[in-house]
Image 1 (cartoon, one colour):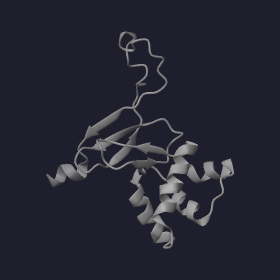
Image 2 (tube, helix red, strand yellow):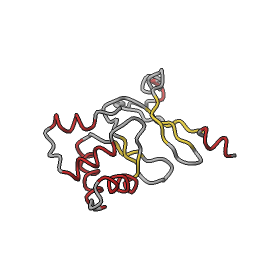
Image 3 (cartoon, one colour):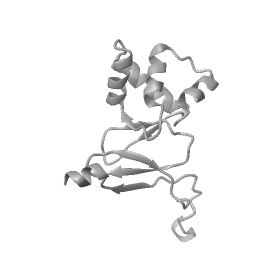
Image 4 (tube, rainbow, N blue to C red):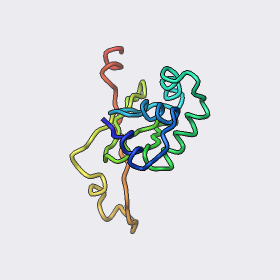
Amino acid sequence: MSDLLDRLRDRGWRLTAQRRVVAEVLDGDHVHYTADEVHARAAEKLPEIARATVYNTLSELVALGEVIEVSTDGRAKRYDPNAHHTHQHLVCSRCGTIRDVHPASDPLGSLPESERYGFSISEASVIYRGVCPTCATAA
C-alpha cells in the first residue's frame, strides 16, 4: 500500500475535501490511473469535484514529488503514488495495464562503463513489456 496520505499529512499539505479524495483514489499498490480515471473515481466519492481540480491536484502532487507521471507508448499519462519506493514497471502491450515490479538487479549497475559515454548517471527507467494473463486468455 502506498503511504501517500501519510506523506501529505506529514508535509502539512492542506487536505481540502477535493485534495483528500484525489489522494484517496491514488492511494494503494499498483495504482496507475489516468487523470480521467482519477476524476471518475473521485466523483463517485465527491460528485461535485471538477475535472480541473483533479488535473490541478495531480500537477501539484507531481511538482511536490509525491506522485510520478508514467507515460508508455504515447498512451495517456498515468499517475503513480509510489514515488518514494524504488521500482520499475511491467506493461501489458495489449490493454496497457501497469504493475509495479522490483527487479533483483540494479539497472544503473548493469550499464557498462564503456556505454556511459562520460555521463554521470543519476537514475534509470526500465519498462518491461508483455501480455497480461487477462489478455493472454482472451486471445
